[in-house]
Length: 73
Image 1 (cartoon, rainbow, N blue to C red):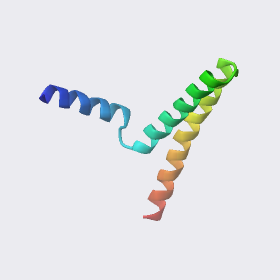
Image 2: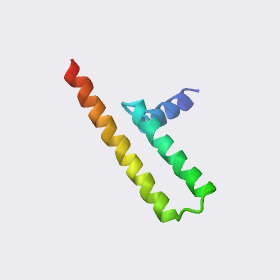
Image 3: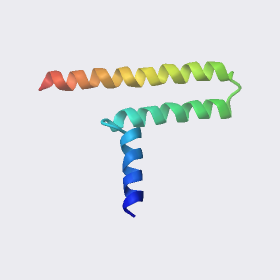
Image 4: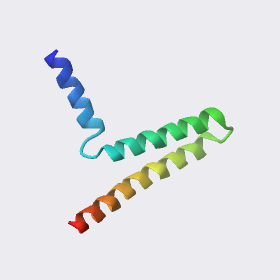
């Protein structure tokens, strides 16, 4: 059981890391991309570009939010 707990903790730290908001944003963007591919006739390259832009936007938003939180302290 200790091995399973350690394995799960490793993956949690690897995926979520320090900020759960980034992980949630990336999962949301990937899910939206999957829905676009499955439900529309949009070319896969366009969806891939939109997903990439979305992930970059999540990263930038997280950095800006963190800077604003640090500034208030």
